[in-house]
Image (cartoon, rainbow, N blue to C red):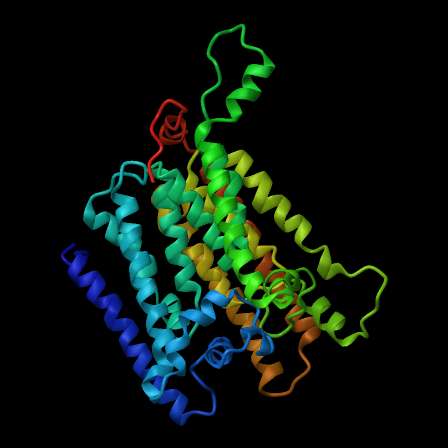
Length: 424
């Protein structure tokens, strides 16, 4: 199709975001319901504290790396236009992520697609109204999207040092990408000795190859270096708000998670110093599935698709689920869809998409009644709708896992043996 040319796809993606940015300014100025996301005000307030020589953590609810506040320092400069600087950066990050998707899809490890076909799948991200809206409202997920796509490119191209550094940076920026570590290590497997007399010790030694060691060391050193700098600058508040907070996080508003009602009840109860708190343990089934079971079973089949399955599981089972989190796996969707049954069986794909959207709409309708109409809809409305959305996600996850499990193992993961040169 003529439409799927680089100039038309990327110009349309840029135009979409430019229109939304301008519309956002109008809505913020004329509507009681602001377009700008509340998180963006948190980011810019933290940047303002930094510009005055203070800690970004003086801004209540700032739970992010100081790097984000540093990046948004121009939002504190004089002039109303500078306030939107961060939104522009996030929108540009969307475009960059889409461009990198095309490069990965055109590469041999990514499928070796022709330009037109690669652009079609990248358009799932580039021309997606949800992606564009979330970024132009002031969500920073586009920045993470760039990191994740570059990470896919680096590891499939055997740029192991760069892949490790990107993994360390991504985990520092937002904790969840650590789940990709085991997938990447499995992907960089060295084939075991082919002689029939090889022993268990030889198999164990084969697991520790040069690529895996370099990836692990470069990721850990980058992650630790960034954390040491931030800790030296901001001390304990950095660790508390950036990492430790998430273990006991209670966020019951605008939350699709099936834990939503329990979090609401927990937030309303007096805190105690002893006793069982489920919010501290809710991550156990989530991490067992996304960080261990899925990568160990699937990573050798197809790394990018496995990363998508991991992220989908991580979000579906998370104790807090907001619309921004959907971008974490949508950015990896173009790598999974080309060989998926959701595409090869249109009726199944359409059914999955309709149910996914409808379950969200049902929840949001009841959440609107709660937040704006003052109706008590927690039980059974919100609870049942969150369970329905969770059920739809689990069903889709099962389809994704079946698809990846049925793929033939690709050769690129086996190619990274100790004898090959590891490039930056």
